[in-house]
Image 1 (tube, rainbow, N blue to C red):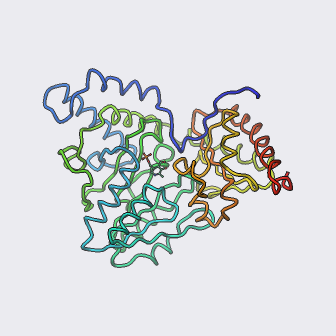
Image 2 (cartoon, rainbow, N blue to C red):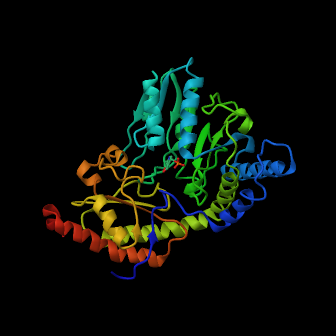
Length: 391
Ligand code: PLP
C-alpha cells in the first residue's frame, strides 16, 4: 500500500477542535470553574466568559448578543426552534412548512409534530437540491406559523435562497427558521438585512467542541421553552451552562470567521481540482448538488455500478476518511433521502461519495485522493457484472 497516512475529508460530519480553542477552554475546566449563576468572583469570571462568547457568536452573525441562546448543538437548536414556535403559536395555526432535504434533526421533529396533530408540508427540490420560492408561496396557508428551510445542505452542499424564502414567509405573517449548521464558519451568514427569525448553529462543525451550539432568536419571536428548570439563558434554556464548551465555541467561531473569504477561495480551488480530476479519470460519474451555489468544501459524486459503503471501506484502508450520504445515515443501507429528493434513482444514489474539505487539507492530499480513488472504483467495478462493462 502506498504512502499510508490519514487524509480527513469528512469535515461536514465533524471537525477537530482547534488547538487555540483547547487553550481557551482549559482555564474554564480548572481555575475558572465557577457556576455562572453564583455571585462570588470565580463565578463572575465564568459569567463574563459566557458573555464574551455570546458577543463573538453575535458578531459573526451580525446581530445582537441578547438574541443568541446557547444550546447543546444543532439538534437541540432545531428542536427548540421548531417545537417552540409550533406550540407557542398553536392557537393561530397548526401548519408548518419544511423541505424534503432537511437534516433528520428537522425532519424527525416535524414528524413528531404531525403525531401531535400539526400538519406539515415537505417542499420538493429540483435536480440541484434547490427549493423553489414559488412553490413555498403556493404552500403557505393562513394556518402556517413556521417555515424551516436549511441554509446549506449537509450532503450535497447546495445553498438555499433563504433570504428570499424568509421574505415570502413574512409576507404571510409566519416565522422563518433556518438550519445553518453546515454554513456557519464556512461562508458569511449574516442575519442583519434578512427576515430570518431563528437560526441554528453547531460548534463542532467549525473546529469547536462537540455538544455546543446556539439558536439565534430574533427579538419578539413568540417561542416556548423546551427545557424547563433553572433561569439560565435569560429564563429561556434551563440547565447549568456548558462553560468550557461555550468559551471554546466562542473562540472557534472567531477563528473560523477570520479571513473567511480567503480560506473559502483556497478550499474551493482544492475542491474544484478534485471534481475535475475525478471526472477526467473515472467514467460514469455524476456531480450531485448545484454547480456553483454550493458550500466551498463540499463535493458529492455518484459512481455508477458500485456501492458507496464498499467504497468507504476501501478508501479507509488507504487512510481516506469520507462519507456516503450523511454520517448519521451511513451504517444503514437506505439510500440518501436528499439524493432521492433530487430525482436520482436509488441504485445510483447508493454509489455516492461525499468528500468535505477544510483549510487543513493540502494539495498533496488532493493528489493522493486522485491517485487512490480511480483504483478503488475500478477494483469495485471489476467485482460487479454490470460494473465490468463500465471499465
Ligand atoms: N443540521 C445539519 C444540517 C447537520 O449537518 C447536523 C449534523 O450533522 C445537525 C443539524 C445536527 O447537529 P449536531 O450534531 O450539533 O446535533
